[in-house]
Length: 415
Length: 105
Ligand SMILES: Cc1cc2nc3c(=O)[nH]c(=O)nc-3n(C[C@H](O)[C@H](O)[C@H](O)COP(=O)(O)OP(=O)(O)OC[C@H]3O[C@@H](n4cnc5c(N)ncnc54)[C@H](O)[C@@H]3O)c2cc1C
Ligand code: FES
Image (cartoon, rainbow over all chains, first blue to last red; front, top):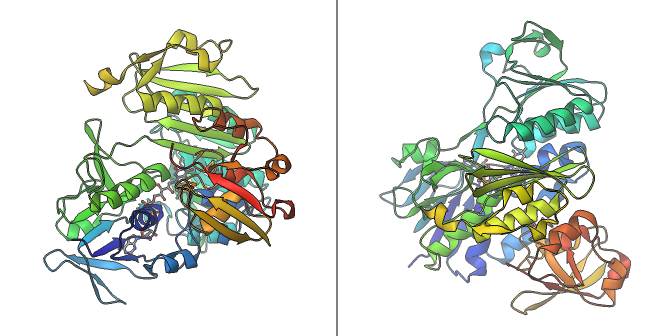
């Protein structure tokens, strides 16, 4: 019988697992070890409303302290796990000794990649945005009139650019690849966001990398770019991706490769250790996959809680979704577009609304919906039911979305 | 301070107190009300904060509009008094409100 569950990491995945264990009436002990100082919080607002000063710190918390107390979930803050002794089933910490477990959940998240020191990544005014501490440092620097250089045109970089423009900064965004959102979206979506940011005044340059930052003392003042130009900077933010926090798992001898490897049940190569959220890579549609999203963190957390209690189905099957807010634009994504071969565009029913639909052959994989909640919800529903819309009808904005004929493509998906 | 009664998906009733200015979703989360996952944290993007608001208070908060309406439109549990909890702000007038939580769909 499982009496003691220990969770390493205090993010959305960890909390979701702990809460689900309790809501499913688990009566053993639950201990969360987290190296961060405060209560577990949501990260998405860090590059959105929080940075903009529109959301108090308290409102970032996933739950207030009393909820953890009431539910007898022990939160060890400022507690880093530094070794897992799998034979003795104990986690070593520096400040709380060894903590014994029956089942261990790794929910250690990810760490942002930093600009290399060789290009000036260690200068004082060069930031990343992953933690509340990062966002607080950044918030102290974003002031009207300052010149911001964003390195990296992924969602976080674009969100940072949008917030900075809204706050009255001058923003240059560079993307080394030939277009923004290169890894995560089709060129149609990239094109739409490129226009958005250009219209709002971002100096957006694609196919341009950072050569190096030139400093005056400890602060970068000039950025030399690969196109031979230079831009003056007051602060620099790197949004160049993250790497999974898998060091602990690796040193414990678990299988690790770009994330802690798990099977379909989120179990690592040790049957008493699970890995969930941003740190985990699991088999999904034939490939080991790491999803960096709130959806996956929450759903895997709930899944492993049920798995520990013997209540879960054999496989964790994600239904991915994601969102991003930039200026007054709400992007909502349903599905996972990996492997798509074409995209169908559907102008929305409201002004400014548009959706881009990813297909592989006849099968719908995902939709990017800009200001189009209807398209997002319809897409989510079709995906959940394994249905795919008729593509000619989909491209016809005159046809209400609910009237679009669909085909069952679940069988094709399984094949 | 106002009092709000939440009825969880399994019919458990919880009466909670709230300060003004929070969203109903935030009040639910702070009191660990079951059935409100609130995964997007109030960005009107997840619909995991779907509630039904009983009269007389539904009249006060009114029907959803724009994105919220579109999000709810596709729910199987859609009712005339459906709202997303994150889009309803707690005001003095909502004292005594009864909220039914829809939960997982
Ligand atoms: C700025 C920003 C914006 C985002 N926007 C969105 C969005 O709009 N939509 C979306 O779906 N997702 C978004 N994401 C991604 C989302 O926040 C993550 O996918 C999610 O937080 C992952 O949760 P997690 O619990 O797996 O990891 P994390 O939230 O990273 O939590 C892991 C925790 O474990 C701690 N830890 C690590 N190692 C140890 C150790 N050895 N001992 C103790 N503690 C340890 C870490 O300090 C951290 O607190 C965003 C992320 C960021 C940073
Ligand atoms: S919390 Fe996500 S829609 Fe309300």
